[in-house]
Image (tube, rainbow, N blue to C red):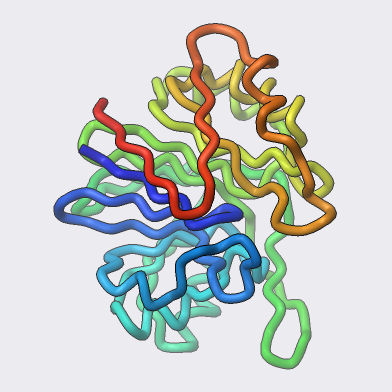
Length: 230
């Protein structure tokens, strides 16, 4: 049994009886988040899709409190490693068997610059998504991305849950997210990365009518949980 807790924006907490996996922990400063970082005391792994502040977020502080291993690209792992953060570096197309299950790093069309303490933007490697398999459940977190032809390869993965951005401007809009869902054909789509800021305003109710086949759309509010039984 797998629970997916929506933190808000692109942040999710995946929970089983044994493990807690936190993705893109933008909590402090997130106007939609109902959780604080004090809620994340038992995190085992943190996934970071790219270096922008609304995804790297509270990674360092949560690691200090939990000693969670951060799974991210090589460049971000070097940046975080210099801050004393334990990381497992991966790159696009790579996969690895972790104690909780298999992870594959997938392509994303976006940027990944890291704004340092002095306000300088430094290279953050390639942005990515993650395909996470845990307790027989395949969860695809697309990261920040536009629609891409590489998504055609994900259809063969038989994904249970796809977490797709819909806010437009920096990422896919609703129409492109629907196209992505129709390509990937997951059992369930959860829209993310919308309405946090004015530039990414979107109506998630517009997504379901554009999706064909048997894919279901579930709209989560920050704090909501989804129970998955593969």
